[in-house]
Length: 205
Image (cartoon, rainbow, N blue to C red; front, side):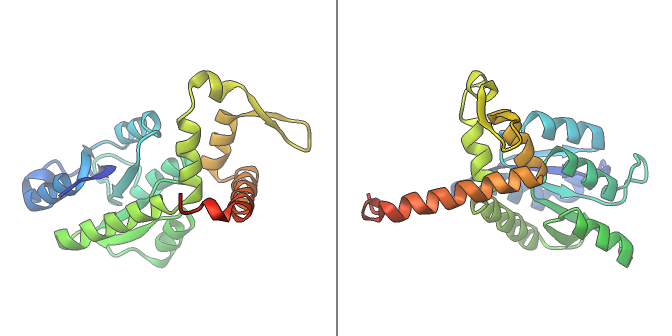
């Protein structure tokens, strides 16, 4: 069975997690390229920031009794880095409506109970992986990252206000899902569709 090209990042301060969930971790390593477990949120955030060129899916616990802040704040910090990463909330607690609403507003990809089976967890992670593959913004991120640093730092476009932007600037806008980032993605999608329509005889090449 071929592995999916993604790194699963688990943020959970339970030091016994890998010992008590041997079957799950075996399944994770069979299905995905890499699995990283972080007990401290700062370590996880640093890893995510340094590896945005990788396909990352996050499993995030909400209750960090030993290492505050709680998982909802960690989700906000992840969203400050990028709004493109699928983050699945993995919790054994019953969240109140306010916390649940905050998680939705911060674009949690999904929710899993800590008692969910390995099959349920793997299926949700695969669902997130498929979402990455079908996301135009992620495709743009990968396209920009394929350029050299020199190319990414060169001026690429000028806004109607006269602001000059490099590919790296655009990448930041896309990751933060700013109005400019969304508009760029939308405009590029329209252009791509138009080009494909004009050259539809080549679509099967």
